[in-house]
Amino acid sequence: MSNLYSRLAAGFPDPATPFAHLPDGSIVTYGDVARRSAGFAHMLRALGVGVGDRVAVQANKSIDMLMLYLGALRAGAVFLPLNTAYTAGELDYFMRDAEPALFVCDPATLPSIEPLAKAVGVPRVETLESLAGQAAGQPSGFDDAVREDGDLAAILYTSGTTGRSKGAMLSHDNLGSNAFMLKDAWAFTGDDVLLHALPIFHTHGLFVGTNTVLAAGAAMIFLPKFDAQAMLAALPRATCMMGVPTFYIRLLDDPGFTGDLVRHIRLFVSGSAPLSADIHREFSERTGHAILERYGMTETNMTISNPYAGDRIAGTVGMPMPGVSIRIADPDTGAALPQGDVGVIEIAGPNVFQGYWRMPEKTAAEFRDGYFISGDLGLVDERGYISASSGAPRT
Image (cartoon, rainbow, N blue to C red; front, side, top):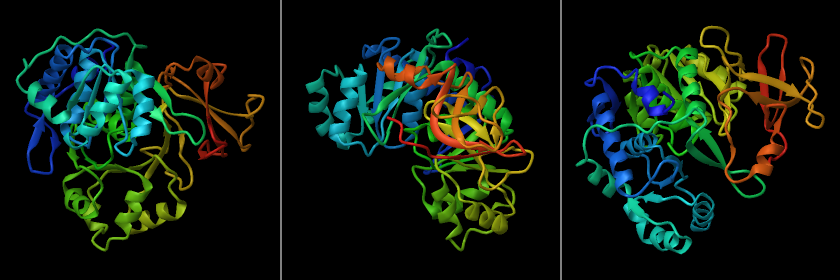
């Protein structure tokens, strides 16, 4: 059973169990997840989206966007989330490159998206609001498409500093293996409630946050974006939080953020950018919690993490995660370097992507002896902890 949704759903709790607590006070249960994702899957089929077709989405964060993501998995389509800040010129490139069978947007952007999509041959444009309304009237069950481990589940475009954006192809097993590994490595259970304020157009919010919660049968407090006051109000109901360094910096700047407020939290995770040792120490002094910093990429999901049970060392991203192989290599020769030497971080494992969409030469150039060349520099210290920093720009 390689369809990612089917793998996740096999462990879903009782249908009445909460999955998402929404800002308006409503609750989406696991039964709702199954029903609403089925509705979206039916609608995708009705709109002519076939197995392997791309479904591009540029929409504001909402629970319907998550249900569309799960519906796309169930239908065997390839989910393509796009940053809401992308310009018309960037969207033109993504549409031409990915050739989506369907583009989904917000009502406010429909007037600008429709002519752009028509000009590049995208056959269908729908608003997420309209699609959700139509999906609500569909049957509550769906026969999930059979997918192999290497079949694509999603494409995420990377925003490199040089050259054009590249579509990282992520398979059902790339995402599934990482979700279940993270569930175990970070001790997620059905009792957890994740405070989710991250965007869902990239790996951190969509895959690390959402897939891990689903794999554990846990719940989330689903906020549309980071807002310090909303976070302070929600933290007493959460057991864990995932964020980027700026989340933690802004919380520390708020006098309402105290150790008593988060004494019950079991886990704070930081990623997507380096967390300074100063912020790590200040957070620990204020709250008694050591933030768990980890390292991942669009192309590889999560690969390195400070331990859940053990020392979380400021200024490091920890050790290789279970099932992931990390080596520090000479950037030019690829030769493995001894402990303490700085080299390029290279990654192998079931989490590593299938390559760049329609860029076979670029894909081949980014792998060496079965390892993906991250382009980031790192070293392994005497305790086995890895420190990472950005390397030369990757094109």
